[in-house]
Length: 169
Image (cartoon, rainbow, N blue to C red):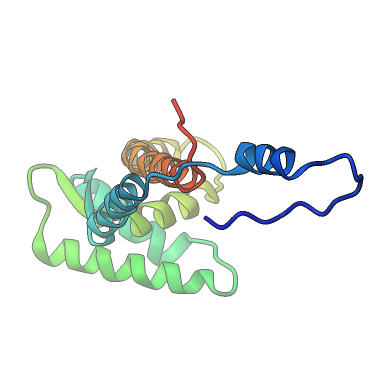
């Protein structure tokens, strides 16, 4: 890294003092470490691109989810795109069938489904059980997604620190 002379504001600063000040601000960046963390981050993000998460589901719950997304979901503007994608996935799950008590959805499908479920409102107790069942199943899967997101955030922090020559614990 090239050293730049600090602009003299006082004639009392010698060339040696200037060098000492600059040395304090120059960090030793381990480029191999930076490259390694960057590769780990890219690889992890790539692994998440098409990752599908198992959402606990039986035929009755799938039917209720389908009904909610087709008939009751509230959306605004571009949220319609999310509803459309979720409905496509529901159709695919119905065709494929539920395997071992789970349906497989991508992180965006789970997050969007959870978002729309959190907007659900009702009256009385008739729909309470079906709401709780749907909400719980997506909430559990969302926790797994959040774990993956935490790994991404941690790798991003490690990369930022390594690029600055810092160690984080």
